[in-house]
Length: 68
Image (cartoon, rainbow, N blue to C red):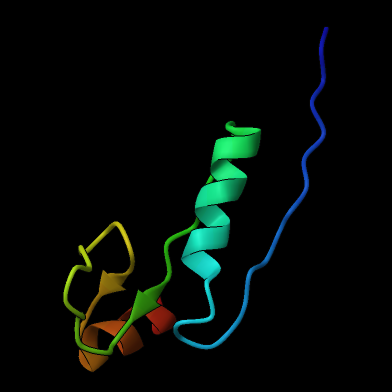
C-alpha cells in the first residue's frame, strides 16, 4: 500500500506581490495539489472570477458564515 505524505504551503503577501504568479509556477511544477480559495467582502476587481480567485460575499453573509 502506497502512502503519500503531504505538506502545507501558505503564500501570504500584499496585493500585487506575485502570489498568484508563484502559485501558478508551483502548480505547473508539482501538479497534484489543492488550492484553497479565500472568501472576501471586497469588491471584485477586473479580471477576477467568483469561485476562482476568491469567493466574493457581502459582509452579512461573511459574518453568518463565521457564526456557522
